[in-house]
Image (cartoon, rainbow, N blue to C red; front, side, top):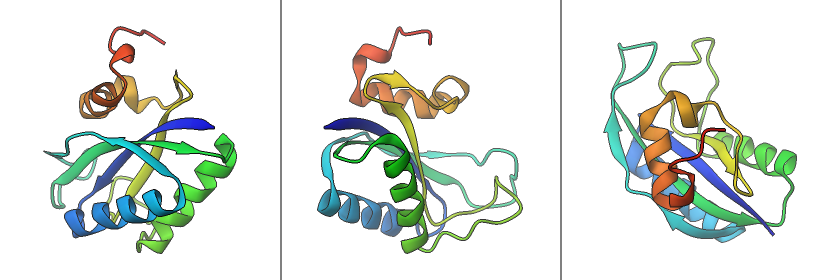
Length: 130
């Protein structure tokens, strides 16, 4: 069993799309925990609604590449359209931040709201410098 901390964000019908991601993930994998969600200001493209961001802790039988592909398909199922502006609005954004205890996404260190959400789920990461 693999354990992933998944960063979650949305700024288009955020509560609805995060609930949809939660429901689908928990029906197809094991949702272990969920962080608090908070409103954040957009990064890069400020001419869009604020985001709702948090994280899920998920247990999966899939390997990392398979789970990454699964998350991208889940984004698509929830109406995500990838635009040229990678900082543009989105129905849902799902990224593996920690995989089996290892920090694997740069946003853990680059974005305080990502780190705080993940550390809420995995407090042992708070002092790690990876």
